[in-house]
Image: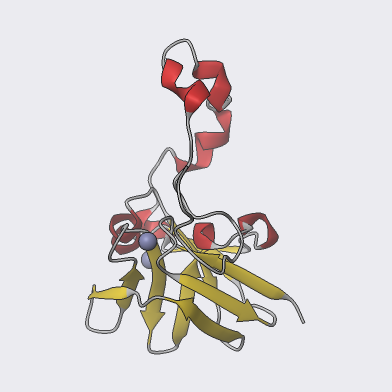
Length: 157
Ligand SMILES: [Zn+2]
Ligand SMILES: [Zn+2]
């Protein structure tokens, strides 16, 4: 049985899913753009899988008469799309999003016109920008690591 874990950036909320996923998608609709603060929402349906919250309790915002959007009340990470036919989890909140590639696009009527050309933009690695932003070379992440922890936050030295 495959086990997937994930959570928000501050670590207050963690989840665990066992089983196979029905599908992984991106949604371009305007409501999802707004809910994620993104060009589109990457969502993995956990319908039919064994899903558990293992730490903390998400907050929800009712974004329509049928749908609630879950997020961490401490750090704001978007976490869920909860509809009458099931729940989907924000793909980037999984500890290893590369394991869950999207297979379909929804809401394409809302697709931002440049979205299909993003891969054509010039690209830079984070460390390539050190000249313009010297602090980058000394960055220490305070985000929760990409695996379960028994205690969090760890004591900072
Ligand atoms: Zn959080
Ligand atoms: Zn949507």
